[in-house]
Amino acid sequence: MSEIKLEVPIHHDEYTAHVSQMFDFEMGDKSITVVKNNLELPENWQLGVIYGPSGAGKSTLLGKFGKPQEYEWDERGIVSNLGNVSPSEATRLLSAVGLSSVPSWTRPFHCLSVGEQFRAKLARLLAETTEDDIILIDEFTSVVDRNVAKAASYAFAKYIRRTGRRAILATCHSDILEWLEPDWGYNPIEGVTHHSGRWKRPPIELKIFRGKYQAWELFAPHHYLTATINKSARVYLAYWKDTLVGFTCVLRFPHGHIKNGWRLSRSVVLPDYQGLGIGAKLTDFIASCITSGKDKDGNYGRCYARTTHPAMIAHRLKTGWWREAAGSRRAGNESKTGSSSMAGNKGWSVDSKVRYSFEYTGPKATEEHAKLFWE
Image (tube, rainbow, N blue to C red):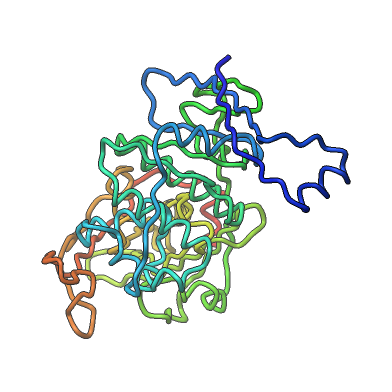
């Protein structure tokens, strides 16, 4: 088995002498640390993890692949700090790492929560590195809440695989391995490389209930449009592991040619849980309930949605459960100024806000689930 031996000189003084005498510790002239280096990479891989307790040698092994990058942040919003990428790419990168709270995009880095800062750093790394670079991250998820860690791990791994990038992470937390589903994992204490298939992501099971209008107060600060909703809206709340995580509401969609039409209005997932696809699961489910029932005249429900959010647009275009409705991709301007601060001074062109319109055509809900909407 290969080993890496780290040696540093010991400077003797009254303090080290006290430690030596107090603990009967024989102190030489050097401190020696041995790290097992039996890392065996598969031929084709995209995501690897070096994991184990503090002092195991994770950073030493990660350093064999290069030096993890650190970046400075200025007083502009984080969306303006993602290197030399276009405004549209900046928003895609932030969404890709699970930082989907648009108001947070416009805030300076130091004004974000610890979890939001962690995700912003991930987006910055993706923006500042090339497709040929191996992304290196030390102390991955070490300083964030474990729910944030799991959600960010899942979102990051999904982006790495979708784009064909490569990354190596060093972490002292093994609870994220099943959310990353790495191609290989190495624990220096064991000295054994484990390959893909060892870790499987657990399913995300939501409990969805009819809610009250007042629940919007918790979610309003994280939505990118107006902070009010129509008081006639039907509210639905999503719980994950008995914790409230998501919100959506539905309004009637009066139309001269559409019978029994409904439209999804505000949909928000709390920041700590963004990146797990909860918003998409919640809105898909409610849409399936709507289209599985009939009104008193026998007309099946029809569900429509309109959005400008890149993550939700990508989901609806990918699944095939939503077809683009009339007026989709129509440019509009809902801002008071008609301008964008994301272009900065780099000469990027910023398109007018393009709204995608969809109608749900996906799988129907069970009769029992449909009652959540129709009874």
